[in-house]
Length: 293
Image 1 (cartoon, rainbow, N blue to C red):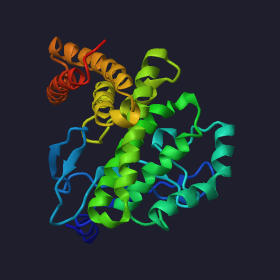
Image 2 (image 1 turned 180 degrees about the horizontal axis):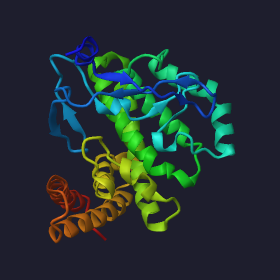
Image 3 (image 1 turned 135 degrees about the vertical axis):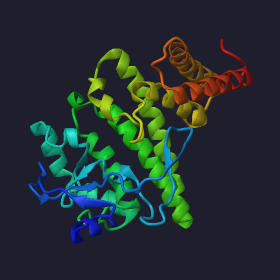
Image 4 (image 1 turned 120 degrees about the vertical axis):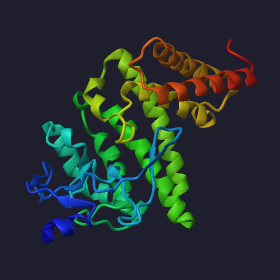
């Protein structure tokens, strides 16, 4: 093994040879990418919100593929999925350029000073998804910003859950819960968009995830809408009568996923089993609230 190969075998990531140019501020940088293989990832359980948990690696420490998904300009903090990096209309570019200082101030109030020239880790990973949510606010319908904001919101919630575990005194649990609620709202909106066609939701099909190991696609959107609606029903609809309507709507959509899965061998097993369990929980919850009207 060469010296370079031996050094790389101890690293989690590397810098791409080609230069990435920021379309907002023209900054040049080398995007960080994760090495594949080498025993870096030790996959654990799948959580109820479809997050793949990874065990801490004795050799490499914490390793997360999500750290490297988003492109982030180290200078102006423009963030997006690589597919959308350069696909900017002039109005979008101008809006993002005008908000550079606001973007930096906003993220540093939450996470402190950041340096995206450095290697990605827990804090920079969390920042990348918050920044992407903010930047997609300025993107037009042609890039399907809503489902991408939904994915960024739930991944951001996962990051802030981990940050809360690491630093329980800093109040990151409040941001975690806000991001989960944001995900609940945007996943619900994504389902509506799938029916109305106001955004080309298929533009996000390859990145719906919600995690990086298994892309559950539109089935994941249906399941997560139901899971998050149930979890945050009190915040989404404070009145019991509104909760029943909200839950009944989510239950009907979930029933279609579960029903189509039973008649199709192509549906992945884990999400079908979780959907069945969630559907049963919905029945009990709705009955406890007085039943469907």
